[in-house]
Image 1 (cartoon, one colour):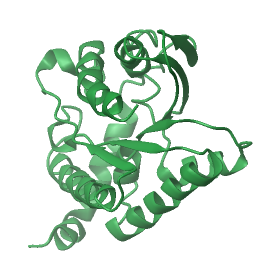
Image 2 (image 1 turned 180 degrees about the vertical axis):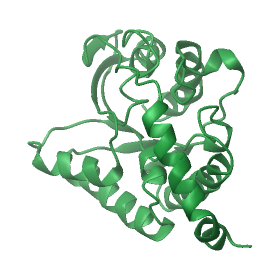
Image 3 (image 1 turned 120 degrees about the vertical axis):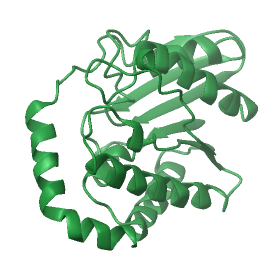
Image 4 (image 1 turned 180 degrees about the horizontal axis):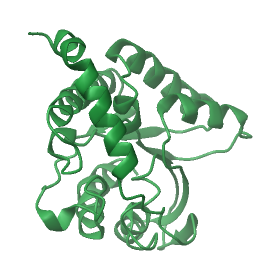
Length: 233
């Protein structure tokens, strides 16, 4: 049975499960610490990190242990990195587009975009997702002068401990569909780069809320992304 028909058949149960998850979920704060910085020596490289709660470091105590800090450590060995984090819990592609449209123009060499989980939970269709990603890429290139856009793949939501079955299965399938669409989009331009999020899902890589990465996972995530960004400095 196609996933859309399965969702329709299970919609009352899925709605109930989603409500219970929202009511019972442990709400962790975004990581503390500076959201911009400069590190390393050599050629200047300006990196915008853009995204949702994972980009904001939920699951880590401080930005130094979150994705931004972990990436800065790795990239600072090859350049003079000037990084800037724009991330918010609950961010979707639509809300991010709205936010960026209101910001004044600014120049970055690269942009790392971490979005998708909240688009999945809001049941964004792949066709709408594709249109939103195209608009985001154009905006980053035209208004923010971004040369290379690095897209972290969506996580395998079908493995999130917080989510009960069958909600976990449905959201996992939807996340995989959006990530497949994103990967295809990134194949259309040499300035777009997709990095599958192949993180281990052992207990030590999951935050206390059963939903976000742990500090150990952020380090692994940075290990995945840093080589791709370094390749295109």
